Image (tube, rainbow, N blue to C red; front, top):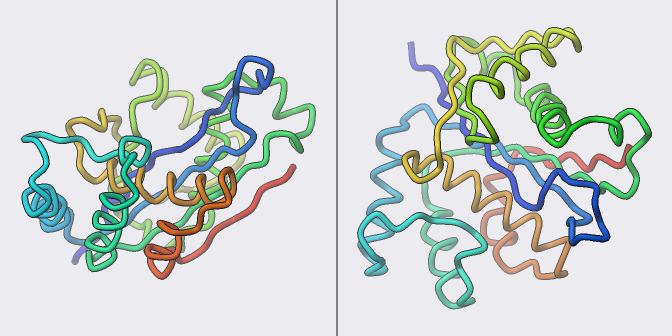
Length: 206
């Protein structure tokens, strides 16, 4: 039986220190595929077709050229994956979320997003989180938050990886970045190209 592999990444930041440049919006996306190796190869083929450097790491904010960004997203729109995302307006958060650490706040919203993914897709799957601080601490804290909020995740395995070594996390970054730019810069270009891949976008305002 085929199961899904999920990867998570974010755009913006979890900080509330707006005076020091914290973003108003924080986006987390989760990308799912039943064929992870094929999707990794697909991204590698995009890299080669666009003549990007060996081991080039795809990241939304690295795509400064609109022309290159459009090419990447147009190619990515033909890949076999689906996505879910949560958009957080941090200026509207209540006291409980404001009192959390950045890691706790990040993982709270990952948990919120996981609830949106249908249970039958999560069952027996693998969840790969982008490295956020110390891997063991992140994983333990995530499991604690899931338990405290009585969320049964259904994954067979949860792991932490760096985006440089996991192309699927890079795809989650691109999806999150397209949503973040839509609301932060009123630029819908990349989002419109990838929109049909997004099964649900939750807008969280507190």
